[in-house]
Length: 452
Image (tube, rainbow, N blue to C red):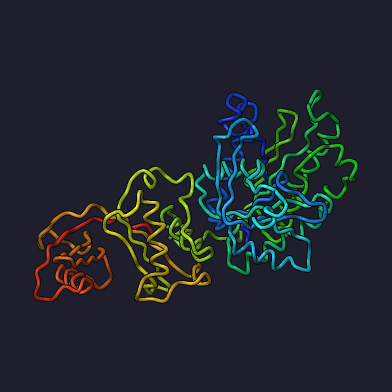
């Protein structure tokens, strides 16, 4: 079936689920934590480009859902006594605008950006409903873009329509998306609960989980408005939103869990689309290549260099090295810029800046456009420290070469197609530097670790 969704999941979002907050209490919800960890890893294995999160704890309107198309969003859990738990996310602005375009005249969708918040005095933030799922996704290795939405509580069927609309928008942009329906179930499962108690809380949870297990909305439709209100929940609109994607998938359900240890129902369900093969570009498999692609995308959308994402490996944020970023389109070079010595504070920043330069400042090519980005294969070369060498110590397959003569410097990466001898390697590097053919330059060699 035609769908852009590689997987969708229901995740709970209690802050106590985070080890920094829950500590010893985490043992009481072990099944939930393990299910969310497993679901995060399995979802990311499908290589989504963007994660779309529906959270009921951000700004909610009486007449429609909302989307938050702000380039960067920030949040922390200071309201729960942990202001040091912070997070920032980059928004997929291109997909956000396409969703807004498609929703026009079809269903109400409020645009909540900086202009809106400045006008109405509302602070944009990552709420707990997004923070907790993203915490586990980031721990599992997610470094991509996000779209944040809040639901429409008064019209559940519109949530299904919104899910299907987002699927179409992502399909149009050839964007692989993963969906997180964030929501807790009944908050009234135990006597003495701060939210009150009703035996119908457990009934509500059984109905929702049955519907998810059967992948059938029929059980949900049996619940009356008064029954839903009595259960005291926040996650039902997110469940309906999830069904907007399930209807277009051939789903397998590798993760399914439920428990209510603190009087609140925590349901976890993951669906992977069996018709969705992992992303074909091996370039997306490594964090360095993903960072380069993310940097180009961000620059083309915002015309400014992105900040370093949180949760990158320490080897990228604590060490420095020269780096080259190469872009190819249908096998042909589309841009290549790099530095043989570090110019930035760390490797991550080196990659971010050189990726932008490769896409927009290589004098041999016109600047890359945003529409081209999905067609580009990206590789990142991390350079070892240059060392003085003789011709006999060069090997065009193993080492790159740097030629220097007075103020002129040329560099050639190793293992390039058509460069088979040391003489070819040196002559090409001299030509790039503008060093006359008769001049014998100083030679340096360096190793390269290439990431595709």
